[in-house]
Length: 532
Picture (cartoon, rainbow, N blue to C red):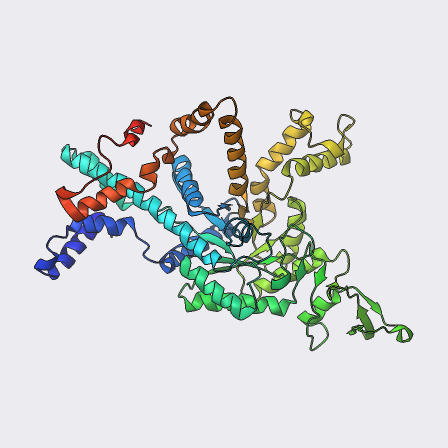
């Protein structure tokens, strides 16, 4: 409804309840309702799922229309990110949030900092999703409150043109609430546990859940060693569980991102149950490294499988895990992707060891031979040394083209000594265009950085500590933080306003009228930033 329609609706509602509601102002009530257009997380999930589905369709029509996100581990980080996006670009279109299980484990667990091994409290994930959206809704309320105050000012000044323009801005307001792709790890247990956690995450506002094919109790970060995958049927049960959760919660457009860690996973915990040659379980087992059995040398505890009419013994480690044949990672990834899409997943995530367009495209093209509209969510990970990787990729391409490489040492290309060289400049350009190139040629619909604000928080804190506790003292804060906030128009320089002080004043006035004791008077030091 429009602003005026909302006021009219509130007036009708107030009038219908008789004299006891007569002190309620219809416009004030309308403003509060408009400032919080998403009463529940399910309202958010339904709204954002439709946005994400429309963006997926737009990408299918034009691969240049890819989407992006930055990982957020706190509501304030998500809020400032979306405020900045609206400030710089005027719209949040095609820009999402990502919630990383790695950052939840490292930063939000009551156990303290933990590695990415699903050891943190799983309830922290939906709680963090709810927190992210609470802060985004507050960003809406803060910005809308500014429009309402400006509207009051225009009315008082008798400026009807400005008042009409402000009312149009209110009617066409773009929310800070955007889709979130939320990491459910490996489901924190069996399919039932996955379903229960998925419901909580959806209820908190998640429209897209990312689940990986690792074993829950052996889960590792995708960029570390020791990853253990599960047979396809085990993984597909969890995909079905998430779909059931979406449907039960009424989010019919909910999105499932199926992640495969098979490229870097050399181990499996179990042999898949096969009922006939060539079935999915048999294909999984075919990747397991095994030797033909010598009846004369059978050892205690040896395990046997049948393969191509032969009795084989899988290579079993002291950890009771089985290893895959070397060099089968890409084939396993492709099979994982195809079967996930054929069984209810909407998007893929292939965890790679480096950002390499040709490598990703090679796998995606194979998947698209079976599922033509297959598309990826891709981790532009801080675990990659982007500078070194792209300088080496450029070095290799130049060397293959016969270019004289005597001025470069491939092993030391990270050195600052190379920063101004032609090779480094070209490598940086490849980094700059990586997302566009990969979306055009490797089927990547969504690019995200999992842990960016983990690193920016550490870097900015290090810089501040060096200056403030050093010779610059207070100037280290003023020059490098506050002065830059003012000059760059960073909203939280007015930190009282950002924390909701002005909204609180508005509410006091709604509730108490002229008796309201407001904080935003002449003695509020935030007035020093009025021109900022």
